[in-house]
Amino acid sequence: MAESKPEPAVQAGGDAGAWAPFSSRVFLVMWVAAVVGHIGTWMRDVGAGWLMTTLSASATAVALVQVATTLPIFLLSLPAGALADIVDRRRLLLLITVFMGAVSAALALATHLGLMTPALLVAGLLVAGVGTALMTPVLQSLTPAMVSRPLLRQAIALNSMGTNVSRAIGPALGGLVVAGVGVAWTFVADAVSYLALVAAVWWWKGAAARSSVGAPEMLGPAMRTGLRYALHAPELQRVLLRAGAFFAFASAYWALLPLVARRQLQGDATLYGVLLTSVGAGAVIGALSLPALRRRASGEVIVRAGTLLTMAVLVVLALASSPVLAAAALALAGVAWIAVLTTANVAAQTQLPNWVRGRGLAVYLTTFYGAMTLGSLAWGQLADATSLRVALLAAAGLGGVALVLSLWKPLPEAEPDLTPSMHWPEPALAPAMQGALAHDRGPVLVTVSYDVAPEAATAFLEALQRLAGERLRDGADHWGVFEDVAHPGRYVESFVLPSWQEHTRQHARVSRADAALQAEVHAHHRGPLPPTVWHGVAPASPDAVQPGGRGL
Image 1: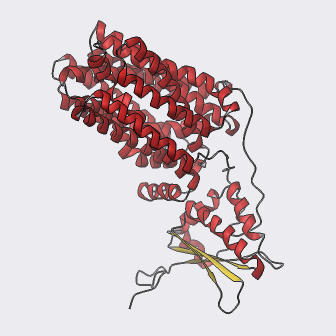
Image 2 (image 1 turned 135 degrees about the horizontal axis):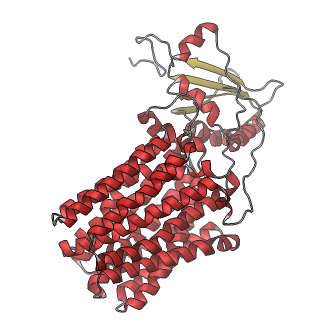
Image 3 (image 1 turned 120 degrees about the vertical axis):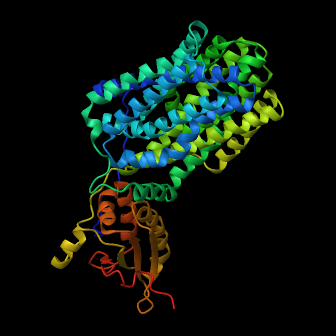
């Protein structure tokens, strides 16, 4: 690592149309395959939700259908995201899709033979949720490999629209299948739908590329690196907080909708499918309208409007006795859902560089599905303890908390340039060290010495504190700054990394936006030479004193 003067960061962007990503044949093929797969999954979920109402009268049991599909994603997204960043994503996707098809086939067989119980249904959905947990970060992390960066926002929006196109089609088909030939066939349809994704991934050889560079990371350290990035990325944290607040209360109508259809509206599986189709149709309309809306309003305004609309829908559902009124309200819920979901997803993706995209999205998905899981369970238990109406109204009230939160933590609007700057020259190594470091050593200490005029010290330290986040996001475990007691104005920045390989990865991780922060710091350094950089590595002897010293 060396502290050479970086080029300033530039903003990425583009004015291409909403449909421009479809000009990429890879994106189009993968998009169609994903839509087909989502249609099958929605048919399965309709069948599972309705099947549970026939197996148990408990609102908590019905809500557990939603919990079973989201809990594994909440628990497993981070390791799945780490895998997405370090392994052959094509092979992983092929294995997952075949596995999920087999799970749905097993659910179909158990239902057809009359062996299904509430516990078995929840267990089957939990296993299927494991597959979804492994698949989702991988699929999302592949989007930048399908389109250029200026088209990333449009591609993310189209992916969200595709999910909701399937949400419009799948529930309607699921309701018709349940009413016509039985629940078991919704599971069969889901199993068959995975063949489209298997074929697409088999065809696209580019999915095999790893997103990270250099030597592959081990799973445990890769997970820690992803968490460390999220812990030191304030803009990403704002997105996570806002997404969690919205999905915690919006999960109420997803979890309780089977009971709204069956108990409150006195309907059958066909009505349940129609209500879900209304949500999906509204989401498609919202997705088509979102590009024009985004040109007229900020992401923050869109999320606040979506929150207000979802609160109103929950109140209407709590009071509705007419299926037509409920369907109309749910169409508006779909508009709000896609607006918030897409805006939050885009905000998260634009705050993530490619090297940690899978893990960063996994943290986002953990937040999303964690809020959905806990919310669904809470609303189901509240409905059991009180009534459906009370649970839906309470969820609407929680939406008010999400609105208040928006005033404190608005969404980031800027899109930093996170492409690698590659402006750090490789550190000079003594011949004796080259062989030793080739086999990795650690921990590694890096220091950077600056000379700063007294009148510039405050501005320098403020800029250096902002740069500290970059050091910690990109691989450092510890960071600090010290002033030389013999030479006031001479500051030494230090940071520690777990290994030499991690430091070499840090060279490739520094972005152009990070380079701009570094340039701010360097602007306060005085003298004809750049800041002095020193590298140290812990001695190889197992008995050597490690950084930090020994206690008395």
